[in-house]
Amino acid sequence: MNRRLGALAATTLLLMTIPLAGCSGSGTPAATPSASGPGFSNPIKSNGADPWVIRWQDRYLLAESRDGGIWLTVSPTADLTGIGSGTEHRIWTYPAQGPQSQAVWAPELHHVDGHWYVYFAATTDDQNNANHRMFVLESASDDPLSAYTDRGPVTGGANRWAIDGTRFTWKGKDYFVWSGWPGAKDGQQNLYIARMASPTALDGPGVLLSSPTLPWERNGMPIEEGPEALQHDGRLFLVYSASGSWTDSYCLGMLHLTGSDPLDPSSWAKSPKPVFAGNTDVVSPGHASFTTSPDGRQDWIVYHSARYPGAGWDRVIDTQRFTWRADGAPDFGSPIGADSPQPLPSGQKTG
Image 1 (cartoon, rainbow, N blue to C red):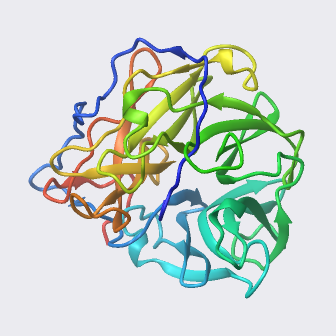
Image 2 (image 1 turned 90 degrees about the horizontal axis):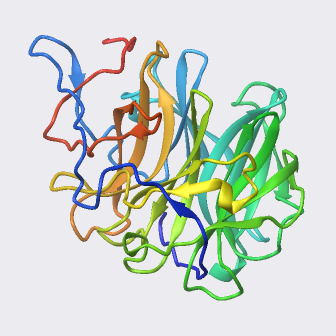
């Protein structure tokens, strides 16, 4: 995210032993298009961060915080890679004052019981980073472009620093995961999880799920942030960003639910290596979201990366297809840069 400052703690997670992509960016590269087939090249948006992309009807929605508000960009019909040229809609304007008026970060759009909810982090008008909390907007109808009401902070949790909140449903129960400090001071960021009592409230303060204990999670500062749920064939994964987002070492790690209770840290296993890391073509890939091709046959990761080595928070938005390993884990491969054309997502219109 555009500034991440860390947190501190430890966790007793078991380590997964499956071999996954390491910090060298090794992995299975995606295929390139045939000489006669249509394709595209990264980036799909020349400026952006923390991309949240989902399919809606026959289009894609991109949620962003910028230019004094939260925006939804609607892609051209059945066009994931063309989302950068979509139609932009401001759905909320930052208030001039108040607890959610400054440093609005990483909005996510979720459809729940006939309404859309936008979860985002923000802080007070004095721009004090220590006051960052999670907030939520609610749509007036089933249309994601309808008017939104500011429902204020996500209530019921611990009243301390929190960013990058996301929600998911597992076996009929709703959960909220976020990145937070273990105390009142900056220095380390952990992942926390809680049951949801409603779309706007948590059922208790939450529990410590994971801490940045591995070397590749501690470059610049010990950080785990940007958690996103990924489900496939009855398996649940949490993919998160690790290390300082301003460094060239930002990468994606992963937790895998191996037990029965998502609220029990011992039910999760952590990958011992990054599952998606930079290489000579792509620097500092992080804060991903997941969607499918227009025909639903392929899985795609959308993420931001640094524009060049040392660029820090000057970032672009990229995408590429990913597949699934024989053991059921996602295989994200290695990031694909601007010099490597890719086939269009299956079912995508070519113009």
